[in-house]
Length: 344
Image 1 (cartoon, helix red, strand yellow):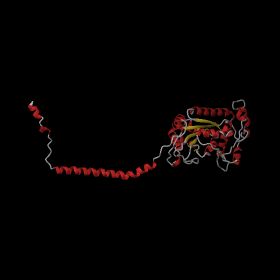
Image 2 (cartoon, helix red, strand yellow; image 1 turned 180 degrees about the horizontal axis):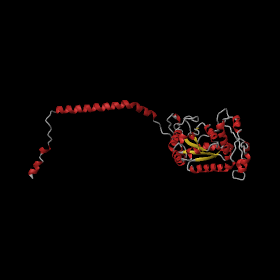
Image 3 (cartoon, rainbow, N blue to C red; image 1 turned 30 degrees about the vertical axis):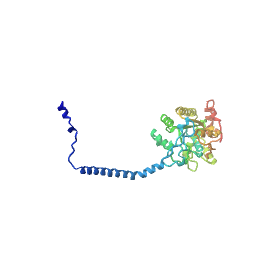
Image 4 (tube, rainbow, N blue to C red; image 1 turned 135 degrees about the vertical axis):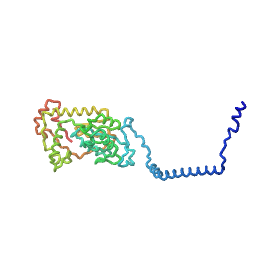
């Protein structure tokens, strides 16, 4: 037992250092500390020199969060604060913006309606953007275009200043809207886009407008230029002088097809926040525009358009084969189209 205790003698716990001078050890330690210090200082100096300017710039662009708008809880998904890449919203950065899309069909009054909206100081509707096929070639290009519009980076004659309160576009149903309706509905609901449906009640008048516009595109009676819309009574009179021939046999089937397309669109987009308007109702009662402004949550203004209506008065003055058309619609549910009239 004593031998075991001797194994753990005091000598076994003594660390035997090399026999070197303490001064040399101190010099080695001091040199090591100096090298480390110089290395650390050099790194710090580099970071300060390269990052000081950046740090100051960052401080300059720090913005206070926008105050909570005084709105109903259901409105929150439809209120946005876009940050454009092409310009600064400056003092209007905290002005909320609503997104919208005018969804319609050709020759349904959407051009006139859009000029009314653009007459408002705080509304920018950027026209029929998807008339260019490449922008609607697939869902990805559609979304890229929409993102640019709703981020206020789409530049057009309708673009307002940085204090825009509602931004959107005009979108025809046959421009990819129906084809990709599922994805577009999801986009609208996710991004908080409101839909403004604008249709025409009298589809016979719409048909006349389509045929007349097609003729004008080829004939160009206004000094060799094609104009879908005019701004003077004289120009309107020239365009209205053309009287199209309507295929009476296909008239009712064509009207039904348009009605079916309209019903499908309303069904497809029923889950979105939307409003439904008819051209004739807006013409007869301009207070309908107050409803639209309330829908977009913009200050109410008196809205005006310079466009002049082309086909006025009785339809019998605008159809070459009026008797055939009259026979085709008499006794049908569309008979009222023959005699309905409205003015603005």
